Length: 176
Image (cartoon, rainbow, N blue to C red):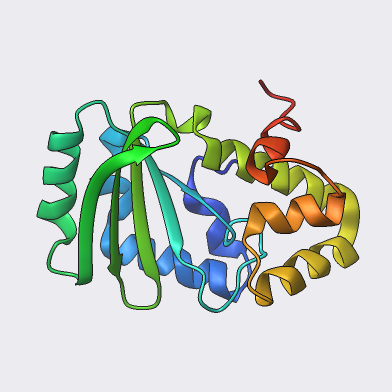
């Protein structure tokens, strides 16, 4: 099993993963945000990304004001930088977006440990499903995504899960 809590696995991954590693290193992101326990989530770690996929970094942030100040200090000079604190699924969240050299970057902070956040739990479930179901399954997920479907709804459709696809995938999380 890949340890997704550290980005070292990207160094020996596919071309986009290696490029993502390079970008994160150039931005100094994992080191600069280490107090917030950053984890790269989303599609790039599990090789179902599209050419437009971004780097999604989740963080634990207890103080949203201090977290936002740190993000601004580090990245506000980046192209198309935005940052907002808002309620997402009834949880206060701070979200920053900007463009790096090769990827759009999203930094997401909630007052929950990164390992307990939905995005990380989705990553683990999706990785397990991809490993268990083989290449045809992976290709079908990528096909649906390339047609405009979001990741979790694509998994739900292929697996024929009913209801809210985000919640349905969380219910497959065996670690909880």
